[in-house]
Amino acid sequence: MLLMPRKVKHRKHHRGGWSGTPATRGSEVSFGSFGLKSLEEGLISARQIESARRAMTRSIQRGGKVWIRVFPDKPMTKKGEQTPMGKGKGSVDHFVAKIRAGKVLFELEGISREAAQEAMRLASHKLPVKTRFIEKH
Image (tube, rainbow, N blue to C red; front, side, top):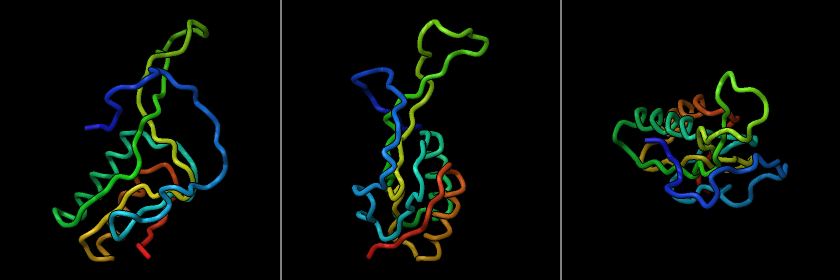
């Protein structure tokens, strides 16, 4: 089950630029005991989020609880193959989450530190941004 908005105000968005400043909101572990924090900005697709979540839940095997702290709400469009230039913007292909450096992507609770670190390591291999394992202060 891929994450995507139920309803959007505007079907297609501009791509937008990057501010370059690290995240201030969502940069601390809030719900669980351990977290996976991004070290660089980027776009994470709904498929990548789901793949990382599956890797984590398989690793912890019915122990602990997982929180997903990012949501893919930005539509990305794609024009069909063999389509010439012009003729407008392509149709919505998938949704992505725009990630800033310092944003906590996933949180875990209810398992040992070693098990959490291994689960986060497996999840990080599925993501296109560099990440770091962090703990609650």
